Image 1 (tube, rainbow, N blue to C red):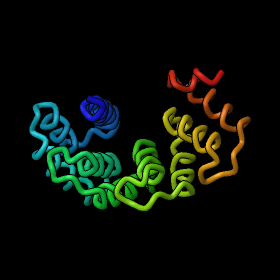
Image 2 (cartoon, one colour):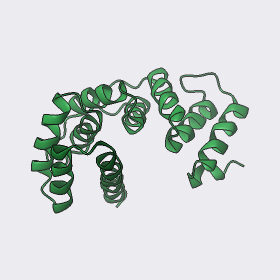
Image 3 (cartoon, rainbow, N blue to C red):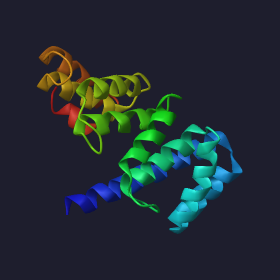
Length: 172
């Protein structure tokens, strides 16, 4: 049941992210990928986005990474997910930065590395990602990759709450 919920949330996040970036970029190939994805033709969406990702387009790189991460329209491949998230994150795509942090903090397909998780969550947090703010709070609360610091943990939780993440509000 939890896997189903996680998959549903992943799809919702991917589609909402695609809509925001598709409007900003006005890239016809990217938009064709969005439309294919909405129709349920994930294999076509993947092919279209991969062509743009290979040309350096950060939103396409994120979407390709996300599809590899979830095995959505393509065989699941955590190393490919890492590769495409990294390329997108280096161009300051906050969702890619957050997902890199998540992969490192969970050791999902790669060696667990809380210092790398901290690095990527911090960059996403600077761009306003509420989930990254919350996860930074968790790192400080648990002393993972950083020295345990309850005051700093609470600060990040409160920032996550203010940014719209209800879980952060539990710490106020």
